Length: 141
Image (cartoon, rainbow, N blue to C red; front, side, top):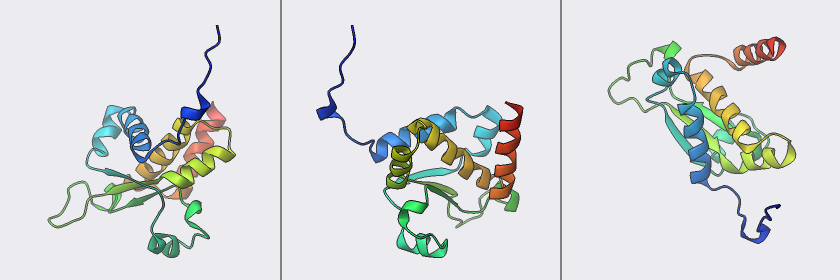
């Protein structure tokens, strides 16, 4: 028997839903990596601030799915200094949902990709480093 979906009861994933997916991704990392990212705060917002959009030169608030702010491990943040703000991975719900609606990836896969990308920045990797690692992994798969 096929289960019918009550389409009238469905809602878009909430900020809390995306936070749960992000934490599942974090807890799914190998223990050695998870321990290095242990002090990173995950912040879920609907959109980046206007200041962030402007600073990063984005055309609109929908252009950013996530952002790492803080001082990465490679820059000496293995031990936080007194008064230092925590490292934060920001995920932006509305741009993520917009991306999800336009692509065939699952929501979990998109959130995991953005989380891992931003964790890469925490480890000190550049966008180019991560692209090279992704290409290498795809070639070996």
